[in-house]
Length: 339
Image (cartoon, rainbow, N blue to C red; front, side):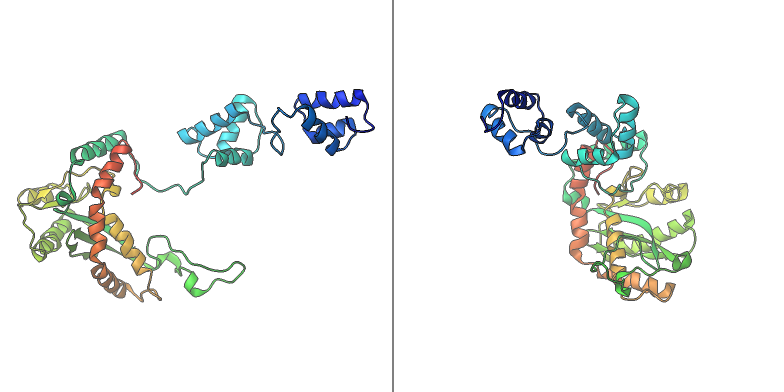
């Protein structure tokens, strides 16, 4: 027993410790030093684990599991919503920071919510059926496809994320800024295609894309691409999405008259089309110029030059990714993938 401590005081300290009070709280209640309480605890309660430092959590393990289940299931979208649900359903009042800390300790991390196309149950079913039908396709099978798409390219700050490095508390420099003008500075729309052997012909769309204009593009740019790479039309498969102009009767009649096949494409599936990533690469390269183009003619010239400069390994690797994309759709049961 520590010196100058009565038996009653000693027993009182032991009692408090057995009831789970911390060394600090027992020392305050009994008006003794923390070192004295610590010595008694070491001697009398050596087999009882020490309480973790800090205040006790306001949330029980069951409440923590409920919070995690609500956020991961989508029942709640934010920590604030989880906080409100706890207060409403269980009358438990905690801060949103407490909820966030609970998520972090469970291994959850906040990520930027990606933008993905809206998928109906019909879309999900079609995507899953497409993946099931093509799950045994090899890279050699995917090499036979010509991939096509349209995109918009801005004169200033082409679409896509841009990053710059700077020291804290320093002013922004011109090279660290995407300089834009009011109303965007204009843009151009292009149609392009790609094959395993190289990028195809592309064209600028100067007006709204109509079924007649699209048919002209197929007759010109698509036909020229097939001819340039000397592709066997009887082995070739053409891919395009489900845009109304693409499915117009006059276009379908033309496609049906060709030697090549047309891929039956599921709607709302840009993640399955490798040319979407090729557009992203093109736009990042366009952002690499020191100065923005002075006008639309210069922008189009840059687009053509950059398109032709994309290395062979880029589009080869994109098409080689198709088996992984199909597998990702299967694992996601038809829903969105990371692509």
